[in-house]
Length: 136
Image 1 (cartoon, rainbow, N blue to C red):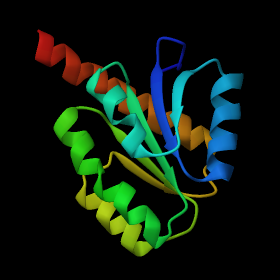
Image 2: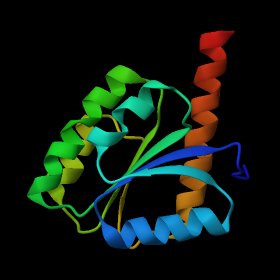
Image 3: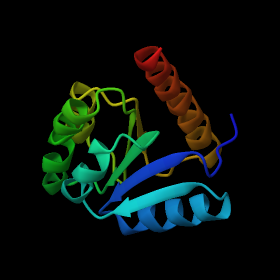
């Protein structure tokens, strides 16, 4: 699946490295995305149901556990929204909690861009299938 401007990604990132590289990558591939520094600020956007995937990029520190735990709120607002987590450092605790929250995919930096695009393509296909079933 080729991602296009009809694809909408919600990017939440407190990790400056991940944020900058993802922004550049999305802009250079003309992928439509909204950027928020925290998940808290993005919750009202999630309710709109206009996004194909949520990417949460975090540093992987203890302070990030709060953001990861809030993924349960995202699931309540939109249970069909695939969530991809990108962690700057390898943190077993962050990964454990993210997986308990039902994330679609979990990356540890550095992220291979081809793999990221494959994962996004799969998450978008899943999202659209679930949306079609719900509406059909």
